[in-house]
Amino acid sequence: MEPLADVITLLRPRAVGTKVIEGAGRWAVRRSRMNFAGFGLVLIGECWLAVDDHKPIRLAKGDFVLVPSNPGFTIASDLACEVVSIDARGSLDCQASGVRYGDPDLEAEFKQLGGYFELDSANRSLLGGLLPALVHIRASDPAAGRLKRTIDSIVEEALADRPGRDLVVDRLIEVLLVEALRFRAEGVEAIGQHGLLVGLADPLLARALRRLHSDVAHAWSVEELAREAGLSRSVFSERFSQKVGVPPMQYLMEWRMALAKAMLQRDAPPLESVAAAIGYQSASAFSTAFRREVGSPPSHFARTTAG
Image (cartoon, rainbow, N blue to C red; front, side, top):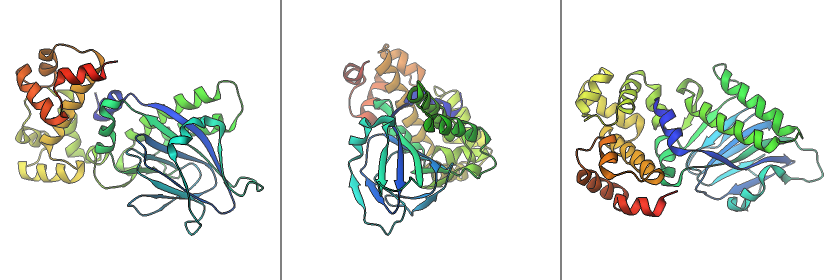
């Protein structure tokens, strides 16, 4: 499978807390950090988005943003406005009923479809660790054809009042997550310039990443992955670390542990089977590595996270 398809399959995303956000006049709202991946799709108008520790960006109609690790952020018509703080956790109960900011007596000048993705708890940190802090895909990008068609369908459903609207919007948003993560660097403005997306946008690193994902049980070495990329060992290591954000062998270790957690959580297979599937010669070697990286033995992890 493709690396991004692997990640998405492992995370089992489900849209939650989807709602239409409206704004009129001057307004600014700050939301607290959450253990969910956040997203926003501008339906009408424009706004500012200021993610913690990053420069504000201007969002226009049709723009899509994905915040994998979902730190605190401010959304505003004008960043000079007084900011109202909102506990984002309470907004999960709103669903698509909508939220209104600014002057309640004015016609809405801004509308955004916003919400969160609930991810598999065992590997929730994986998305934030592999992807940039924020992905901004502009509606004006000519290469975003497939994404635009999905966005158009979401806009049509979100602004309509038809039976089953919420269910259809949720399913389309899940498709949108897949499309957004498949989008290459030419169409992605990434704040936080490292991660799996950035690595896959590099043709040479992408070759090595695809080979690694296609046979994770193989006894990979830096030298062998460098040959797959057509680079020297030193150049490959430096380039991989710079663009993906971690050294090659650390990436391999983290991915193997993510796969192991998914297997243990879902099926609780024999440790020998898990070890063989991700490249360990014995159950004991796998158990030692798992305990070191995850913080608990595989058997304990399986018991406490099963289901």
